[in-house]
Image 1 (spheres, rainbow over the protein chains, first blue to last red):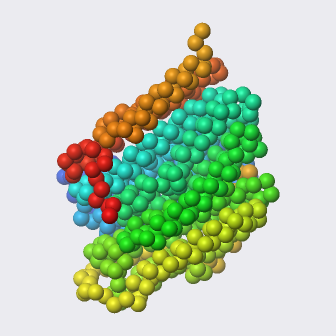
Image 2: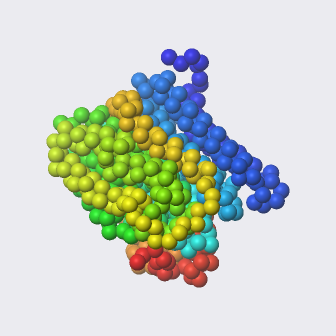
Length: 497
Length: 100
């Protein structure tokens, strides 16, 4: 057991560290007398220290087994810390660290850098907290804490029309879906008289007001679908990811999606277990339909894109569909630990490979090489290291065994087959095969095609390169370390069900 | 006697007006007002059911929803401001630079 006895609130250390870092960044900026003269190196250094110490706390707690046998309850059961919290915290902190390093180069020319980093940390605090919510009240607050700074970050380049348009669309859909989520919560409260997850589950009475509870659950699915960029609230994703500063696209598409899914896992296993609410709404069927729609739509739309960043955005929608399988496959004959654990694993691996792929696009934007597939022609001759990393990301995203993306998809589809949903796994496999087509178009452009014109690459940005290489190394290393990661993830999922 | 059903109908009506506003209006400020209506519909439910069940969690949560709605409007107005600067108007259907 732990060598030092910590007070129970210390279980929230990862979120507290991130929140404190955001405030320290604001403080540094306000001490500086002249606007926009704060040293970017100082801001990045403080940010990196904050992100890495949050990561350290998460990994330490995971190894020490904090809250993994019995969840730690805080603030009268409003928050809790268990294995799932820590796995999500690890994903968010890792992605955050990569995004912070990459932002050092990406926003080097932009004003208001301290605000950028503070908002990034506030959003990360919200995402980390989403893993520890244990009542609908805290769930709504954490969801807003992660969304509101994200809207501002997407429209950070305020003289760039694409960035403003992206921020507007993200905000419009986000505000609408959070209103729907709040209304859903109010209906669930009306049907059960409680906001605590476990109290809701025990108060569910299929005979009294079944319609109200059913509508409430569907509306809560809507709120979660927005956060995870799943059908039917996916249409903000391509616009927001394409227009946003690329490190922010990476952050939202990886960390925010993972946080949304962990919230969904917790709500639908703790508050609405299928045997309790089966009389009102069969959410298994709902998630099966959503998973198929999201996988098919995301992958087909990605296949028709000409712009690499937009292709990655649609592929991110497709990956939300794969993870939705984890909820759709919670059938009675399924092994629930394995199904949910597989979803978590895919989110973990996806966190690294997707962040890496977006950061490569950020690198290309840094060099002004253009945004379409043709613009990437022959880039490997100029930037071989980054191109090798990008190839690893893309093949791993497609599910080829060069990175851990192969194993996480294999476990996920295997779990679906085990749950008796072989057709869902088959659709997933077909969608993956299609994804190989559009991912390999980028690889072909990088390595095989001849450049159409000379690249003007005069500097190799240290921060972006470090982030890309680290992400690639972790993606590959997770292949041999997959057993270790899957043990943690499946154990964490086992505590939920 | 006014029962919870009456409040439920009232909140559903307010929510529906909000949705109608979002679907029919192109002005970004009217969009914000419509979202505000939807959030307040949730508040009506929360407060009414809080009275019905005799516990306070619904009322307390309604206070949080109001605070978060205000924060959301603050961010939203900021985005609408830069929208106006970049596109010369606040019609939400005008910005289509990315759609080809």
